[in-house]
Image (cartoon, rainbow, N blue to C red):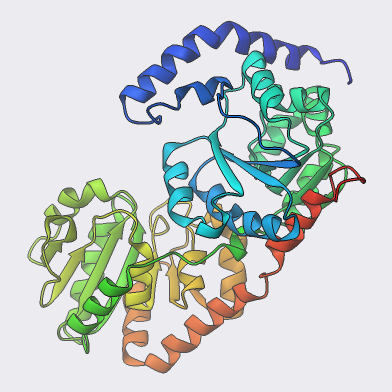
Length: 430
């Protein structure tokens, strides 16, 4: 193993010194409901359950987005390696709950979930000495120096899965080239999510970099309660309806303006607002002014002509299926950044976004080039776009088909990722 440079050694020393404080932090997180009762020891690498026999492939996904993108990879790994166990670690309680909800029941005995240990050398060592993975994959940009160093010490090959590196992060790493070489040099293989990410990683001296595509393009569709979807379709049959999804503060007032612009030409119009943070439901309703506004969290039904605020968790798949016309928020007001447009695309929605989508530039460009997404600069353009699609169902269906079709071309990405991970295993494995 190459000698740690000064900055990497300082990181390890700082993490060791900080360990007592990290224990206190974990207890505070547990008290706030951000850690799982009875599983806090996992965050220190402690596990009383035995390691399963045979080969074990470890994947780490930091939070919800990474967990969603890696779900199809778990299925591909299980199919391609029937004798191996898959260990998936995550860093948040929400991602653990998501995995429990979305994991194919047939994989329950093949995929184990644990919370990732915090990046303290002793805790990382304890975790790896217990699980002894034969290969590891870290998803996107979730790289921890002590975990990586401990993998390299033990000869565990590590792959960066769906790797991403922004221009800002590249500039930061350039200031510490020795640390960058040490950290990224621990990776046996990198699959970048795009060619631009691959180029930035190569600038840091990374080797074995390929760019097969973004795993988020092959994520499974959001689920929906079939009985509730049928009930709402029956209830709203014949009414003009559209969705403002994942909205952020300031955008809902603009959506109310769009609704008022549209309702004169579309009697019975229902605008559904699904805020990114449902706890804001009361504040959004207070902005409605003279527009009728009901809240789903209070059990209020859709108004006869107005806005329905669906301030609930875990139902986005329901709203995308119900509406078919979707504006995706955090994009109308600068600096914005955008929210994931792939979720409505996967379900065949016609999609619009505002001009501020810097976090999803590639996805917006791909869907726009396919004819499945429109960029609107302001409320006037958004109202005109919704009006046009409400008047022309054929155009709406064509946009939705174009959006979903653009994603279907990437269906083989999970299998290719699984194959790349399995290629890291020793040659004598069968």
